[in-house]
Amino acid sequence: MELRYLRYFVAVASTRHFTRAAESLGISQPPLSQQIQKLEREIGTPLFKRLTRGVEMTEAGEALYQDASHILELAESAVERVRSIARGESGAINVGFSCAVTFHPTVLTLLRRYRQHYPSVQLRPREEHIHEILESLRNRTTDIAFVRLPCDIGEEFEGELLADEPMRLVLPENHPFSDQTQINLGQLQEPLIIFPRELCPSLHDLIIRACYLSGYQPKINPLAPHITATISMVASGFGVTFVPESLASIQTGNVTYHNTNTPHLTTQIAVIWRKHDRSATLLNMLQLVRDYLHSA
Image 1 (cartoon, rainbow, N blue to C red):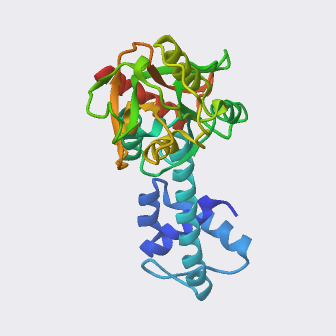
Image 2: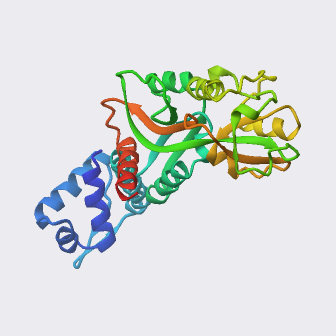
């Protein structure tokens, strides 16, 4: 049974009149009558009683009317849903995050704007090691990712630089230098708390290199399971650490945040995606990114 038969039937059933139904459908009355007759033959029973003025539904017609109306609503809803997905206005987008980038205001702003512009799109976040993010991009379980540079993304991905972010030194609040705004790293003697290198190799190497270039040759204390955990370990007296500036927004007691005298402690945040990926949800996200960068 074709949907157009049901549309013709519902139009006649709603108006109780062939001529008015034909006008609402934009067709002439004789073809409409023929289509209804075909539908009745296909079903095997009359659907309308022909009256002097108009028609009325038979018992079978009344039963079909409810179901036909529902079927047409479902069909229209399905078509609109598919069109919405094709426009990137619904569906889902899988977003990866590495190295605590979710705390950066640029990333937060972009995610908020995406939610405001596309409230029907399900945003699925996942925080992973950088090598896991690259692999999930390759196998298409992640659509787009916010990462820290430098990282070797290769020729299979494209990227857009979002922001530079300096690193901040984190000291316990009872440290002799805790009242200083800027710290000379060469004066530090405490153990360094750091996360495992595989979590974010570029940031790990950046911190170690900057320490040695500044004359601070730290003993590496027990590794923290992730970047944000380093702050808690400083508060507990295990040593000192470095975190991206945006993590200074974490309200953890017993620590202080400081600038340093080294120009080497700056990281960058970028967004990356698969080259040649033209999915609508991704393109909409990238357009928001570019609009934001253009207006910044």
